[in-house]
Image 1 (cartoon, rainbow, N blue to C red):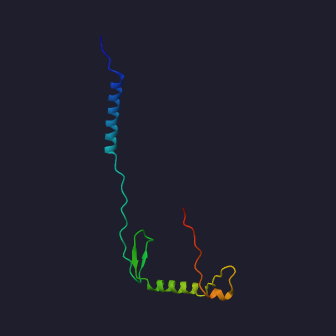
Image 2: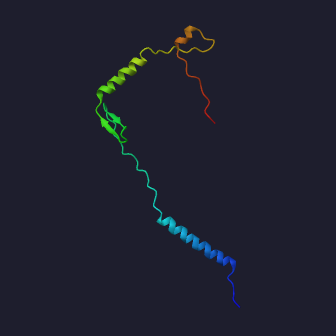
Image 3: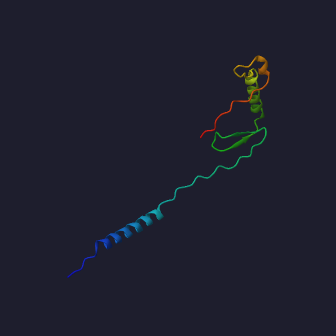
Length: 107
């Protein structure tokens, strides 16, 4: 008489065999390359940083900075803000500054 192996033992051997195969496959698989952080860029007065090439390139571009400053000053030259008035107050009360309205914090 020939004796058969119990089913549980057969399934256990198959599971161990598959686990070893999976472990070897994972070990041989090429690793995923990790992204390297970009190098730090020193911020200097009067210089611009150009990222258009994919790398930070520091340029001495004083003329462009001055033109941008003049453009911003020209754009904001005619902007004025009228004093805010609370409902029910008079124009004389408008000369005193009013605090901004309180907002409820988000829950």
